Length: 180
Image (cartoon, rainbow, N blue to C red):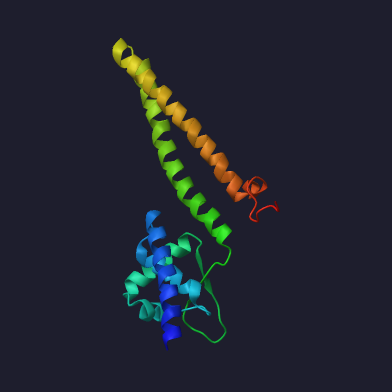
């Protein structure tokens, strides 16, 4: 009995750490605990099983599963004879890392770049308007320069993300440490 409690405590410690870590990246702690539960599970679980184990509402459980599915961290699996949806974690943590960061980064880059490109177009209109004061023109040119520098940064980030998606990054930082 005592050994089982120790095992549960060590697992809880890791699950809590995973939940806190995922929270740093904007994933609710409940989804982190769900991921930890699936990590330690020796079989795929249904929403009901996960709900009962974690004491969460079915709605909260469903939302957490959907978040983890969207991030490619869990997957739905089929088991013969089982009518309910079953879920398990994706075992390739490296691919999960790549997927998570590429999904999050691409979204942020797309949003920010789009806003900056629209802003540059508007600023160019201001500059090219005949009755715009020289002071406003100068300020608009300064703003354009700042935005273009940031767009260069986003271009670099996109190339970094490309290297994650193609796994080219592994040529520079291999998964396995090189023998010393």
